[in-house]
Amino acid sequence: MDPCPFVRVLVGNLALRMPVAPPAAGAGAGVHPFPSPCYCKIRLGKMPCQTAPAPLVPSDSTTADQSPSGALAAAFHLSKPDLEWFARKPSLFSPSRGTTLKVSVYAGRKGSACGVSSGRLLGKATISLDLKGAESKPAVLHSGWIPVGKGKAAAAQLSLTVRAEPDPRFVFEFDGEPECSPQVMQVGGGTMRRQPMFTCKFGCRTNSDLRRPPAPSAPERKGWSVTVHDLSGSPVALASMVTPFVASPGTDRVSRSNPGAWLILRPAGDGAWEPWGRLECWRERGGAGSSDSLGYRFDLLVPGVDHSVPIADATIAASKGGKFALDLTSAQPLSRGGTPGCSPRGSGDFSQWPLGNYRGFVMSAAVQGEGKCSKPTVEVGVAHVGCAEDAAAFVALAAAVDLSMDACRLFSHKLRKELSHLRSDVLR
Image (cartoon, rainbow, N blue to C red; front, top):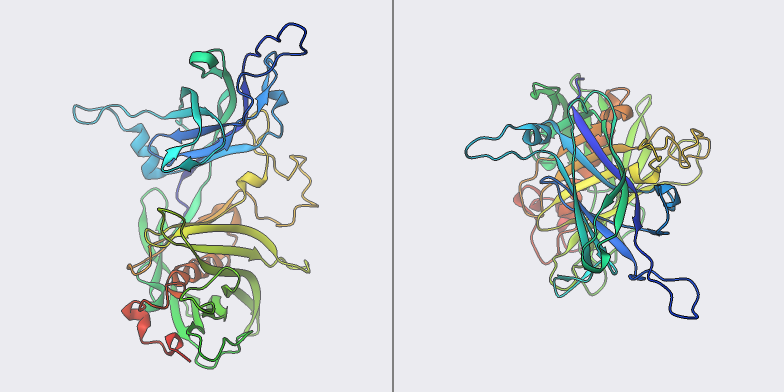
């Protein structure tokens, strides 16, 4: 298998240094002019903005060593087309884009009211980044203090570390919707050539051994499964719906308190399967001015550990779709030199790391919103694929996420025609 080039740009070690107001006569030490929490909005080129807290440090600090934890603040994932976009030369109709990191610093708590940001802008800064060669070797692109203030905060400075590192990934594309039993193609290397890698077989068990039966009158979606085969026809992964997607009493939606669930299984030999992960999904109700979303939680079932290990708990917009992601980068601190710590405390000791070899970027799957034709694209970090069966498990997981978008559709709405014929979507 030939991986595709990706680059991760990591921003961390944020620390905000501001002048201290002089103490009043007879008073003690001075105070910061902005005692409320501060945070940063960080944007790299056309990538979506990310937000992180900016801890205050004493005004006489000369280094970022007093930043509380070396925490990662933002991570940007750049594909080969993204890198080409940044590197494109200017023309008459296309001005130079360059690679710039823009940071805006705000005082106040994160959030918004009536669509207006609740924070007060203190200042901005722009850092030019050179990503040349980042596909082949890591590099620290910036480390130190930069001025960001204006007005009363004119002397404010922000310390941050910016690091770029290669992050090659295997990329797979479904050639059709998972319920249509499609082929799965691998997108190969720099040429982006597509070639068949797996086939999927969708099924629906009419008499499944589900863990808990729904109420007699409750509508449900149950018994779905996707088996992934290699090109020889051998099954190499399985996603099986083990808990039905049932509308909560008095509603037409699957709730977080009663989610549907899938097991992702891998071959254990002699035709047997062993569980590798558990995916739970539900429909998250949207707040004021926002639409519903698909909520999900993924737990890894680590051999030798008597309990599941949660590694993802997030949402995907139900109407627009988005990315399901397993990314453990934020669980590992960014060192002062910009290097991600290789263990939870950057000590190099993984004896207490509960996720085995899983760290950094693991995988992502792009899925469409409900009611739309969805052909998921799956990215898997090279470090997490030792054989075709490893990749197949992630492909099965992506299929389960995609089908959960349909399984969590409001029961007052019909499923897409590809699924509407299934007997599992009837009132029992």
